[in-house]
Image 1 (cartoon, rainbow, N blue to C red):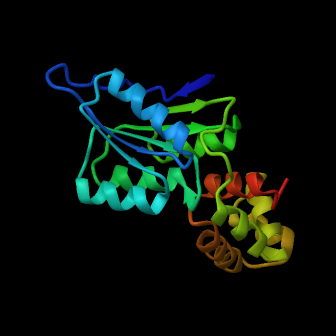
Image 2 (image 1 turned 135 degrees about the horizontal axis):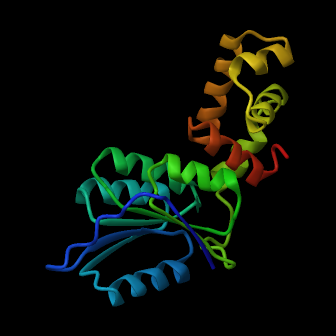
Length: 200
């Protein structure tokens, strides 16, 4: 197992009392294993969820907790999208589990405010996200071209010049891609497209 940690000083967990956590992992065995580990580390309350939707619902009804552990590839979407939402609602600590060790995944995680990104040889999820795969299949040929250029680090203006489009048209394509993939973050869009094989 390898770990990539953001170079920011982490505030220590409170020494008085015990911390609480939300674990959002698709595979039951992995979810239970992480929950047991957190309890052994002193978690007084561990709330579990199997999907992005379930995790979002439980997180928003519970209010901010001290730690959220998510699988990068949930059955119904990206765990990074969930962490980004939670961060805007006061969740300060996020940890991502992933079977992918690539720069796009790490960059997307750090952009979402993740403090720790763990890569495991055993995937936390048994299957790739269904919506990511189906969305990858729904991308048009032009959207795939645009996304390939995004993956190469090009700006909207540069993409437009390469494809004979205006920067505004490129922006429209990216908006449609974001709706299909469930994220507007460029790095995360590329990561999901790479994972589903839509781009290479």
